[in-house]
Amino acid sequence: MNIGSTDRGAEKYAIDCKYLKRTIDRERPDPYAMLCTHIIRDDKDCIGPFLEDIETECGLWEPNTELVNRQKNRL
Ligand code: SF4
Picture 1 (cartoon, helix red, strand yellow):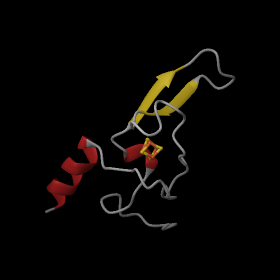
Picture 2 (cartoon, rainbow, N blue to C red):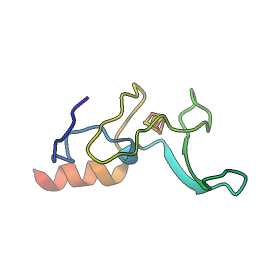
Picture 3 (tube, rainbow, N blue to C red):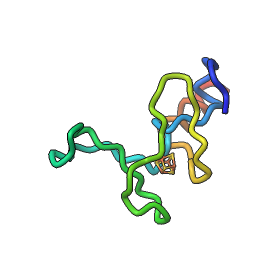
Picture 4 (cartoon, helix red, strand yellow):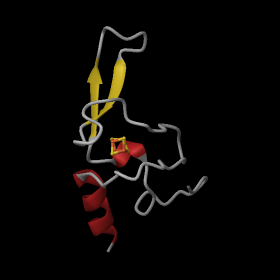
C-alpha cells in the first residue's frame, strides 16, 4: 500500500480497476454500488477502498482502459 502518493499512473486504486462496475442498486441503504465483475468475485462488492490516495490491496486488480491510456500518454 502506498498512502499519499499523487502518481495516478503507477498506483493501484480500486477506482481504476478494469473489473469495477459502478451501478445503482435501490435495494441498498446507499444505492451507489461498486461491484466486481472478476470471475472469482462474481459481482460481489469490490473490496475497495474508495478513499483518496489509498491503494487497494486486491490481488485481482488490473488497470482499466482509461488508466492504460493515461499511462501511455505519459511516455
Ligand atoms: S475487488 Fe479487486 S478485482 Fe474486483 S473490482 Fe475491486 S479491485 Fe478490481
